[in-house]
Image 1: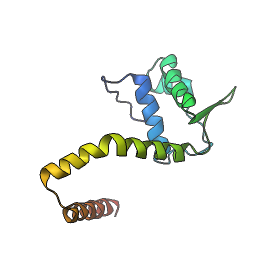
Image 2: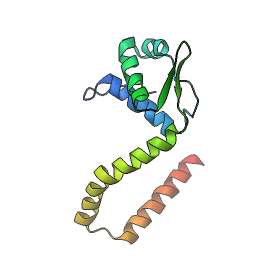
Image 3: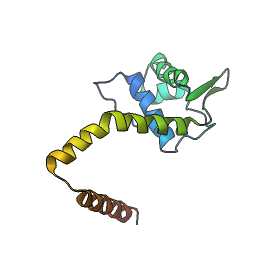
Image 4: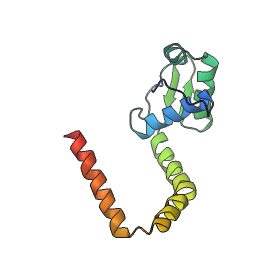
Length: 128
């Protein structure tokens, strides 16, 4: 997790978002344990209650399960649920803005596909 915090958003929410990103990226998989509240609090110099509040949001969303005396674990299907939710949010909230920009700039489908291919090629070159 990145130790830099954005001042515009509560830290517990940023912590929750970072765990979500780790699940989506496959860093944390179904059944994996989350780092302990104590370890995260100590490593990032946070109040343990802040960490617990971020983790509790994940529990409330059904992404993480609290096992008494053992810690917090990623629920089965958490990544699938997150992908579904994030795709829905993207299509409802972000895509209309992206589409407006595409239309405003007069970009064609061919230009967009070419840009995607160039981005993929550049990303492939970085991994070589």
